[in-house]
Length: 460
Image (cartoon, rainbow, N blue to C red):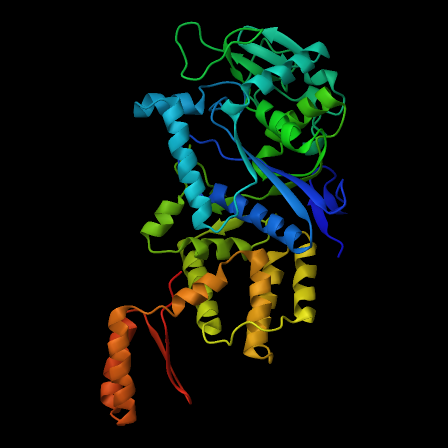
């Protein structure tokens, strides 16, 4: 099956052709672990999880790498301001190392709650300082760097292809339009590869280098880690659309300058998840975490279902009403499949249509429509279930587990069900209805069938 993905590099859908037959090198920009990730951040990882699952479903062996930024990401997202980990340390009284360790655990717990398969390799920026220093030496030897008071900078005018990912005319950028103004820089778009530590205080995270004590620039780690794990050129690089104008052009420039090759062949970017029409933002205080969702009795899988109802390149406007609808919809699917016979033979025709939708730049809304089509079809229930479970290997809604859980009733329900069965046998409909109400209060759905009553307890 031919797969087409929207490549931001060329601004069009292109057929995906891997560098090595049957194998895919996949790199995803990971979190900066200074605070709880918000649901907009997590939505991106749901999308790239589905991408990986789909590639695996088509027989590819995927090597997935993700960086963990625990140093070097400054508050301006460029080269000015304070390191986000150092700032969080000062505010909390904990060391930057403790902050990073804690919020990495939070992130991993969040993606586990969302049924996101962990990358093959998580790499922290602080684990690759030696490799990053070596990479800087390569850039320096090739004449791409210069030194100013606060650090070592990449001269973007030395690379004619700089900015092509975002269609930028780099040398014509006005200072302050997308990065903080620094009058010492040769060009407004130049960026730091190594920042010097302040002379008046010691940082939690700093290292010796040939250029002075300091820490790596934010963009450097991804160039280094992707090359370490996936080679000079790999298949797919993913990230949010906010990386299109700054982080990814800089990362790409470093890699191309060092190796003479394109860093990745396909660059995929997800659109923002918005709230009240604006970007979810920690700085503006307009964001929600997965913990906030759970506190309001919404299931993480309901949020995953909501994200998949929207195409990844279209902005999703998050509302509590839309999340409520997604949770109700997912519960309805679980209720529907709860009494299907054991999985038998999946429908090749429906699966083919489902995979075709996914092969068209991950068209998850259309793919979900085929799941509903199976539920509404005339297929035997065992064949329906086999087909749905195959689809869910890609969608990752955890339907098999949710179905199994729905049949594990609480202990108090068993007595009520026996009493209700007896009441119905005695045609005591009043008592039967009373017992139904008690079961409903426990969250248990009752279905009266020709073969007797059936009960499920849907828990997402």
